[in-house]
Image (cartoon, rainbow, N blue to C red; front, side, top):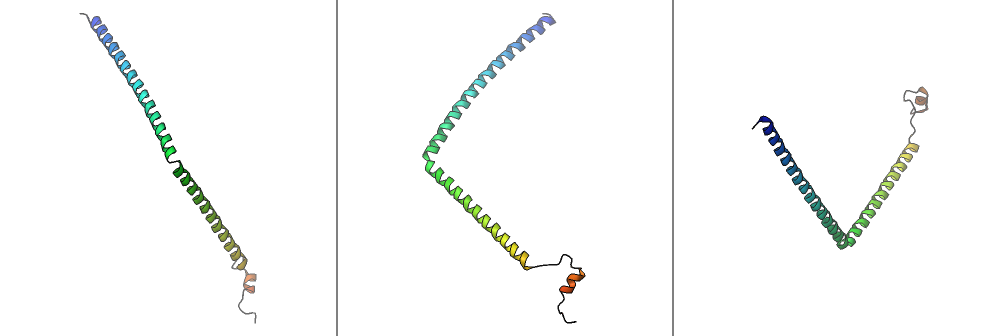
Length: 115
């Protein structure tokens, strides 16, 4: 047997094994796709059953969540309004000179008007 015949035989064996592996891979991909479809259908059916069985509980939970969010929003708005009111009263109550070093401000802030 010559080297050329040996190389040709090895190449044929390699091609045969490659084809066999590609066929096996294709079968595995088909089986995986089928299993994936079955699982998707099963889980979708399970979710439909769950939602049908627990529809009242889910609706109640959504309503409670919406009410809690509404109350939290209302409380936050009240706190913000109170803070604005306090800030407005404080701003109107205390008048400070722009510059503490201002001579004119010191004149009007003196404790006694008796000279």
